[in-house]
Amino acid sequence: MTEATQPLAGIKVVEFSTMITASLATMMFAQQGADVIKVEPPGIGDPMRWLGSQKSGISGLFHNCNQAKRSITLNLKAAEGVAHARQLCLSADVVIHNYRPGVMDRLGLGSEALRKEKPELVYCAITGFGHEGPLSGRPAYDHVMQAMAGFMTLQGHPDSFAYVKTLICDKITAYTAAQAITAALFARERGAGGQHIDLSMLESCIAFLWPDGGMHLTLQADDVTHGAPFADYYQLPLRSTDGAIAYAAMTDDHWAAIFDIVGRPDLKTEEKYQGMANRSVHMAELASIIAAQKPDLTSAEMVAALAEHDVPAAPCLALEDLPAHQQAVAIGIFEQTEHPLLGAVQHVSAPARFGGTKLAPCGPSPALGEHSDAILAELAARPQP
Image (cartoon, rainbow, N blue to C red; front, side):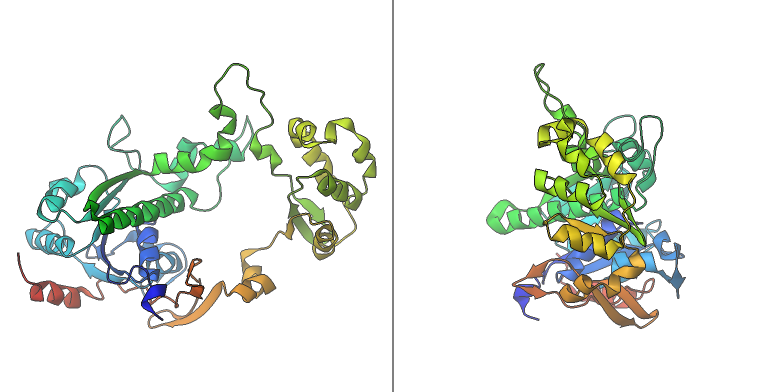
C-alpha cells in the first residue's frame, strides 16, 4: 500500500475514552494510517470490552471500534500514571477524550495546559451535553440522547415513542468528531497551528437530525406553506410472499408502477395522489393503503418488476444475509481476518477509497495493556523538552 492510500500516515493520536464515540472516531484514523494509542485504566479497561459476544477479554463491539490501535494501561489516579499520560499527550498530534467537563483539567491534562506547552496540538473534548447549562455535568448514553435529541418521537407516533435500534447517537458523534479533527489537522497544515475542539453528543445529534427531521421548523415566516413531515415519505414496507421490500417512489411514473404491482391501478386516477404536491399532503394515507396490499410475488420478483420502471427498491435483509449478497461481495464490503486472540473474525472494510484503492484490512484490536511496555519505552527514548 502506498502512502497516498494512507492519508493519515505519520499522525499520532492519543485516546482517553470509554465506549463508542471517541473509540470509533479514532479507529477511522487508524484505518487511514494514524498511530492510535488507546489509554485504558488497569483492571477491566474500557467497559466496552465486556459487552455482548466476547472472547479473551475482547467483545465484538470493542473489536469493531478499536482495530489497529495500541493499548496502554495507565492509572490516572496515581501521579506516575498522570505523568506518563502527559508525556504521551505531548508526543501526539491529536488528543481526544469523552470524559465529563473538568475531569481532564483536574488531572492537568486539559486542553489549555497541554496546548500551552505544545501549541500545534489538536485537542478534541467530547461531552454529552456541552460545557454549559444545567445538564453539562450529566452522564450521557446513546438511548438517553435518542430521547433528548428527538429521535424517539420521530420514530414513534404522537402518543408513543421508539428507539432507533442501533447506537446511532454514539456513532453520529464519532463521525462528527472525526470530520472536525481532520479539518483541524488540515488547518494546521496550512499554518493555523493546533486548536481546541468542543463537541457535544446533543448538538451533533440534533444537527444530524435537523435537515429533514426539522425541515418543517426551519422556515419561520408567517406565509410558509407546510407539507407533510419528511418522515411520512418513508413509505411503509411492502409485504411479499417471503418477506418485504422497501421502495422510494418519487415521480408519477414511479407511483404508477407501484399502483400496478399491488393491483390498485384505480389509484392512478385519484386526484389527491396525482403530482408530488398532492401526494406530499396525503403521503401517510397513501403509504398505509399501499402497505395493506398483498401482492402474490416474492421480494425478488417485486424488486425486479420495479427495476423495469427505475423505481428504487430493495429487499428487507437481515444482517446475517448481507455478507453473501452479490452487491456486498462485488464491492468487497466484508473482510475475513485472523485475530491472534479471537481467531476468525468478520468485519466491514473502511468505506472510503483513496486513489481508487481500498484501504488494507486493519490490524487487530488490542488486548488490555498489550503495548504498555513498548509505548513507555518509546516515551523514555523521546528527547525531553
